[in-house]
Picture 1 (tube, helix red, strand yellow):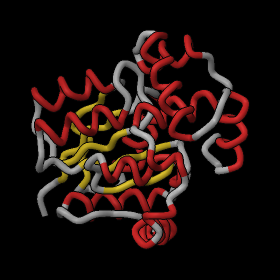
Picture 2 (cartoon, rainbow, N blue to C red):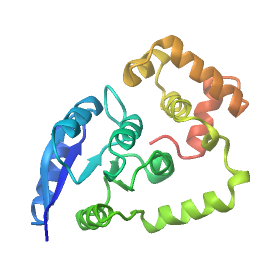
Picture 3 (cartoon, rainbow, N blue to C red):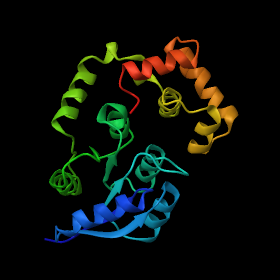
Length: 212
């Protein structure tokens, strides 16, 4: 069996080291590249040959969802497995819609990660049983979806960050956007959510489990 060449894209060196250690126990899985942010990940992909990308959803410079969309555009056949600290209900469906082949939380067991990588590398999708149930519900209850699921990715990110207590300036720095642009996203999501202020957004985020 030929080896699966993996690029790990995560902004935490300790996480990358831990993932490399876990995967080293499987002879068919070989980490042939690492990237600390989305921009670096795209450079590595353009310069190297990889069979799969293991990507965090929260990275500086360009976040995982944006990077994922770029990977799909430039490398449409390259599978991307998203590995995130965020619970499935926060970003999983958005990641899959953006083109991810699978989604795992960092709390997942090492053997689950190995299984997911092998499955995704074969061209299949990977989701946990709990996420599969959530996806089924999302399809059957599309007309009754909660308001936050109808937001754009940027609006959703802004909602989660506001609900986490971050200021517009902090959000702008993290998403590499101007405060004015973040203000526009905030205004749009307030309108779509039919809310008036950050306090209401924070209450909503806590109620729906959008905040860690």
